[in-house]
Image (cartoon, rainbow, N blue to C red; front, top):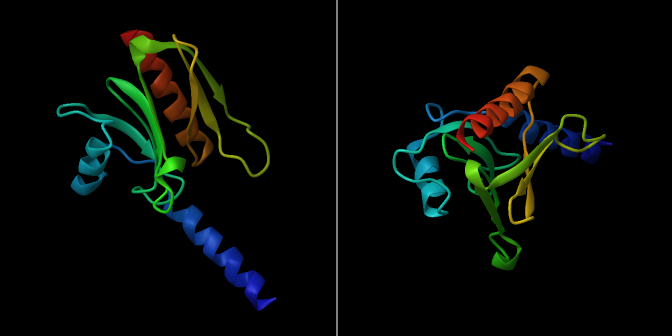
Length: 143
């Protein structure tokens, strides 16, 4: 029973630490890390950022120019996933608010070349809705 409580507590701590951030709340080292992944350029502003784990492992965000996601596996770089699309490259955006038990809400991005990727986001309902609406607003005005 004690082992079970430790696992539950650890999961709760990991989940509770994750929040939606902005360009103003991200550390400079986080911004530099994202730039080193070639997912951000000088002068590009991160509007909303969410990580389901540590920021140097996973990130989901949108900027004034693109929507992006990354997963970095420190033990096996073949498992790394880095995806992004500039708004002009996006054919369709689908939002999945109720992804099912145990799954995080996400945006399914379909690029004009047919490739797709998911951008996950979690938080309270208002934060998730704001993230989704922000992405859709940027896409509609910049495509």
